[in-house]
Image 1 (tube, helix red, strand yellow):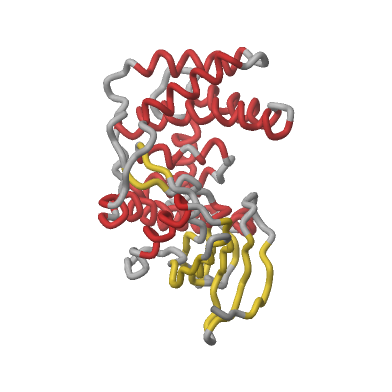
Image 2: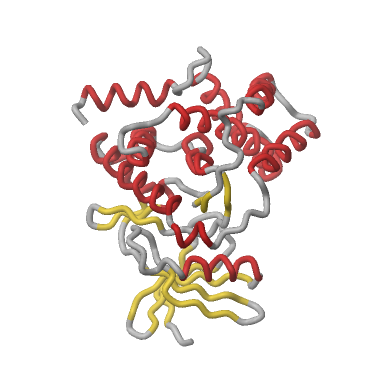
Length: 292
C-alpha cells in the first residue's frame, strides 16, 4: 500500500488523520483511524455499498494492521456546503435540501446496510440514559426543565415508535456535504448508529441548520407529503437530543451558552402546543411566496 499525500485536511472535530492522497494514479480521501474491531466492522459494512446509486463518498479500498485502519474514499472535489450556503438564493438552498432529503431516504432504506445491522442500544435505552444523566446534574434551568418534562410526558405517547430501527447517518448536516457541479455528496459516514430514523433530523436544532435547506430536506425525504407521524417523532427526539446536547456542551466547554439559545428557540417553536414547529410553517410560506 503506497500513496502520496497531496494535502492534509484539518477540518472537523474528529481526531482521525484525513488526507487527500494519490494512489495508483487516482485521488482519494484517506482516513487513518486507530484500530478497533467496531470501527473495522463499520468500514467493512460501508465497503458493501460502493456500487449503490447514492450520492456519497464511497469506500473503495480498506487496509488495516494491528495499529491503524486505512480507509480510502472517493475524493469529491468541490465546495463544502457550509461555506457557501449563505451566498445561495433561497431557491438553490431549498433545492439542495431536496437532494439531501433524497440521499437520507436512500441511506435509511438501503437493504444492504439494514440487513447487516445489529442494535446494541435500544431507542428506549437511549431515552433512559438521557433522563438518568439529567437528573444527576446540578446546573439546570427553567428551559431545560421544560424540555425534560416534555420528554417525560411524551414517553407514554403510543405514537412514539421505539421499535423503529434503521442505519442512521447520525451526523447529517451541511458541514458534511460537498457541492460538485450542482450535485450534493455526503462525505462523512463515520458514525455507526442504529435507531429511529427520525433521529437523523435532530441536526436541524443541534447544528443550527440553515432553515431553507432544512425545509428542503424534510420535503425531499417525504416527496412533499410530510406525515403527522414524522412531526410527532421529530418533536420528541429533537427534545431528547437537545437535552443531551446541553449536558455534552457543559462537559466539553464548561458552559451551556449555545445549548440554552438553541433550547429557547425550540421551546418558542412549540409554545402554542402546536405539532408542526413554527420555523417550518414560516419557511414554507416564504418559499411559497417566492414560488419555490
